[in-house]
Amino acid sequence: MLVVIEFVIALPDGLAVFAVGVPDLYGIKKFMEGLFGFLKEKNRWEPEEIRYLLRKSYGTLSAAFARRRVDIDMFLDKNGLNMEASISDYTYLEKIRQSVLELVELYKKEYESNSGRILRKEVAEAKSFVRKHMKEELQVADIAALVNMSGSYFSHIFKKEEGISFLEYVYRVRMEHARYLLESSDLKVNEIADEVGIVNPNYFSTQFKKSVGQSPLEYRQAQLNKTEENSRI
Image (cartoon, rainbow, N blue to C red):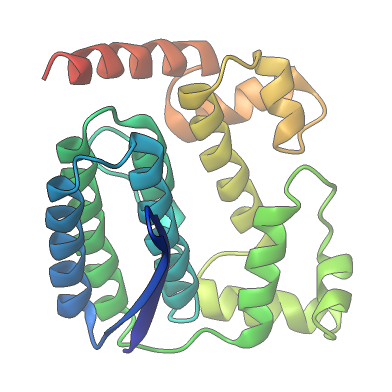
């Protein structure tokens, strides 16, 4: 699997553009380790410049793995953060490095379990649409029409490819994003419910507890406790 990661870096004397072709999953891990070593040496850079570079690598990895049946946003590190959240939320570069390398290992295992099979284009498009429009009402018929399929055939193909129904996937994506918002924002529970496309906040709270094992407020407090522990490391 060849993944090309391209960066545009603002340097004092102009813009520098470089691209790295990573031939396989082991190469990806090696590249990420090298990137963190490179960033660690460049103390002149501001934290947000470093996060920008890491987000670029995250975006490229996400797109590449999505076509290979691996939704990287569904994987969490030992503190319950996916890669996008770890890049944004961890204070120290070393904590981000540990999280990213841990997650890359999880992606590798998932990829290998799928035997490298490529995800159907229609399913990849549907999954991408869900992530971008989860706040909206998402009906099977509408998504099927979007990818030029009948509702029944789309449902069959989606479950065959993903192992779960389309509506179950929507549910998982919404719960995952709800976890992220509880961890990274001060939004109220009813506002988070609205952000993930669930109109009734009581129903949202019930579904969240069913999914995570904690109420939204209990989950937020638990994550705050973890953040305080991380800040002392």
